Every structure is written in structure tokens, then in C-alpha cells.
Image 1: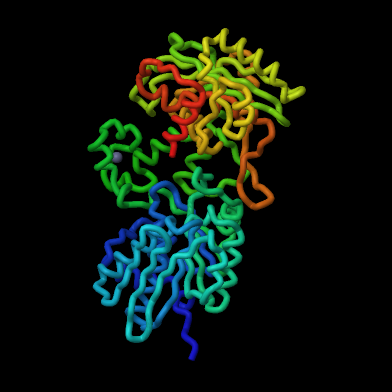
Image 2: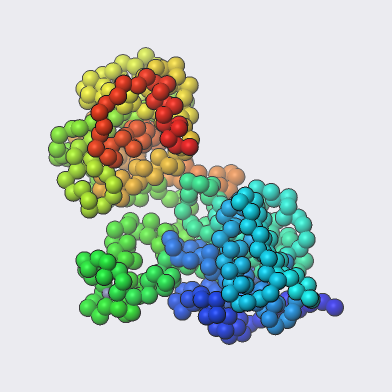
Length: 498
Ligand SMILES: [Zn+2]
């Protein structure tokens, strides 16, 4: 006897009816229209892009749990469910939700295994057969070749390679198992970001079929947070300026919530689109989209006294060599945004395109800049990948060893968001360096991963290095300077960042 495939054969309106019975019982808020649309849609492959705090883990788990509920309460079928992630820790939240819900419904025979490390699993033991939820890690792709599942959820799908999707499609064939993909669109520091996720999100969004569809789950779909402006206004009455009118309360929920409207005004359109609205906007994108606003960031120097100066070196063995000078000044608007107590200014960029690996030139230029801007020897930084150069050239500390370029990009980006970094329009080489930074982009690599397009970003990398040098040292009032040698500096930084 073949068992009917419940998940695909039930029409959305029937799933919705069942959901209206199930979800209130487990305490899941489903009333937001954006949430509801995602919850009951029915395709062979369904992709959900989630905004910050949108509740994509809840949606992914809820879509799977509705199938489990149908098997457990209505059809009395056994079942095998997979939660696939880039690694085991990222599959934990969804499985934990489902275990909580199963217990909340008072089902007997619920066994939840939650080891400190490795795969979590959920088993609901029944007379007619068990319902099992298993974690699968993309790191162990070969393990995806086991018994065929009835339904698959891929979490943080943007961090899974296209091969993972191929495996899932193969394994889904036998039982026509529906596949869900959830994840964010931003390239994150923890994971690589693969282009297929963004591309499919874009393509399926415009052309939903029985086979596939993509839905954005914007941040404001989370009505646990964005149901009314009342709580937000109570905490900060000034937010009322962002409400659309005087009709405060539930009328200002979702997209109209003052925190969402404020984010829209504060963030650049690209960041708002992918991080909040969860809309795919193409993969050839700027690393620093904020810099489109030239009048804001490229301006005549007009700040207070210089309290510190840092230098960054992007050493070119193949690429050009660039040196950046960043000076720091007491911030006039401390407390408004961000944690920075000093404003940083890019003051001078020296750039050499011919004969890149000219160590003599580098030494002379660095000494000249050190004298001109009063940069102590320990305030020069270079990229960790250029450690060899740094070691052979005493006096240049290596930036935090474990840190990736992405995290340095995060440092520069957050300074821009906080209005704590400017380019001096009159500074030597600064205007050109600004235009370069504005154009630094990511692209799709051969592997399908989204990576930095490392053409013409040397000056920007030097600025990032200088900023990282000051990171952690200029956020709080400066302590009395201590004499350390180069080795101690490096060791201290490595220890701090473990
Ligand atoms: Zn309001």
C-alpha cells in the first residue's frame, strides 16, 4: 500500500484550517499576513528569505511541524524529517521549537536528544510507527545519502553550497518530499554566502509555480514585536516622530511600526531591502552602499584636535601598495548613535602602482607619514595575510589574526552607519580613495560563493586596516600608554580575540 503524500496533497486552505487549530495551541502568533502567506504556501521547493528578527526559524519549524501534526493526529503515519544546516549548531533552534511544541500538545512518547555538540534529534514514539526529526550537517554531505525523508528543511540555506541543494533534491525524489529553504540574504562573517540562494530567491519570487516559489519574510512580519507602536513609544516617546499619524496603537503595526519606519530612514536603501524587507536585490552589490551619499562622508575637515592617528598598510606583492592615515578627534555628538567616542577621518592615502613589492619605498613613505601625522610605530597595522611582510619589517603589527576581511568591513561599515568616519576632501589621495571605496563590490565566484571582487580595493583595505588598529583601543577613554614590543602586541591581540 502506498501512503498518500499528505504534505503535497493537502490544499493550502485545508492546511490553513488545520493551522488555525494547531498554532494557537502551541502559542505561535500567525496573524501577520506576511507570516500567514509563508506558512501555508505549497510548492515542491519553497524558499523563505528572512529579515532581521523576522522569525524565520519559527516559520521553518512551523511548516514542518504542521506535517508532523497531521501524521500524529489525523493520518497516524510514521515519518522522517530532516533539518539540514551549514553545521549542526545552526539546526538546533528549529528542532528545539518542534520539541517544545510536541510537549505543549501533551503528546506521549516525545524524546528530545540535545547533546552539547553534534546533532539534536526529536522522536515521537507511536504504536503505528515513529515520527523522527533529524539534524543533518552540510559539512557531512555524504550522510544526506541515507534513508529518504518525507520532508526537508534547509536552514541558513544561503550558507549551504549548491551541492547541498542537489543532494536534497535527489533525496526528495523517492517520496516527493517538499523542501523548504530559509535564511538571510546578507553575506555574514560566520559563513560563506552562496549565490544560488540569492539567485533563486530573485527568480522564484517573480515566477512562482507548483515546483517552486520564494517569499520574503520581512522583519515586521514578527507581530510579537511589531504589533503596535505602544510599547516602543512608552520606552522612547520621541519615536512618535516616525509614526505616520496621531492614531497610535495597533494602527501602527507591521510596516507602519515607527521602528521599521525609522530603520528605513536611517539605513541606506540596499541594507533596508535585504536586512529588513528581506527582498533579494541582485548579487553584484556594493560593500559600502552608504558611500553613495558623497556630501555626507566626503567633506572638508572641520573637526576638533587630533587625539590619535593610525596607519594602515595594504602591502602589494602583486597588487599596488597603499598606505592610509586615519586621525581621531573627540566626537561632538557622543551618545546619539553607536559606541564611538572619537570621529575618524581619512586624511591621506599614498598609493603606488608600479613595482609593488618595494620595501624601501614603503619604509621611507611610512616614516614620512609617521612624522607628518604623529603616528606612533605601534599604531601601524597591516592585513594578517601579509604577516610575512610584517615579520620581516619590524614595527608593523598584524591585524587581529583570526579576523577575516568581512569583519574589518563590518568595522568600517558600522562607523559609517554611526556617522563616525569621514574622508577629508582636501587630503592627498583621499578623494580618489573615496571613489574606490564606493565601488568595492562583491561578486559570484566560480564556486558559486559570493566573494569580494578584489580588483581595485587596495586603498580601501589600507583604511580598514588602520581602523582595525584603533578598534578596541579608542572606544573607551585611552588608558595610560604602555610600552610593549611587537611580539607582545600580537600575542595580546590573538588572546583577546579567541
Ligand atoms: Zn504610533
